[in-house]
Structures are given as structure tokens and as C-alpha cells.
Image (cartoon, rainbow, N blue to C red; front, top):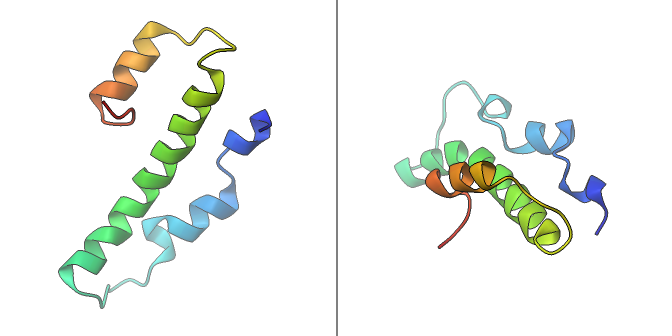
Length: 76
């Protein structure tokens, strides 16, 4: 994969961001919750893929990894 594969594009943001949804959500509670989770999930997927890609090829600051783990972006 290329480094550009880990860049979050404006199109990706627009597709999953809460602002892309109607003003009044019409789904079930679970469906409406998913609207808010989609954006965070997309960021976590991109970040995790980036970390995995760079794990053997570059030094990633330990503090960055610790922060990512503390907010659940890196699975145990």
C-alpha cells in the first residue's frame, strides 16, 4: 500500500460524517447511534492500518501509540 492509502479524503469524511445526515434522524436508536460511530470507526480503521503498515518500517513515537491505545484506536 502507498502512504496515500492512509489519507482520509474529504469524500470519505462527507460520506460518513454526522453533518451528511438529515437534520432529524429517522432510524431506530441503534441506527441513529451508528451514524455517530461511523466517523470514529473510519478514523480508527485508517489509523490502525497506518500503524500496521509502519510497524516494521518506521519509528512511531511511543507517546503517539500510547495515546492511540488509551482511546481505543489500537486493539489489545
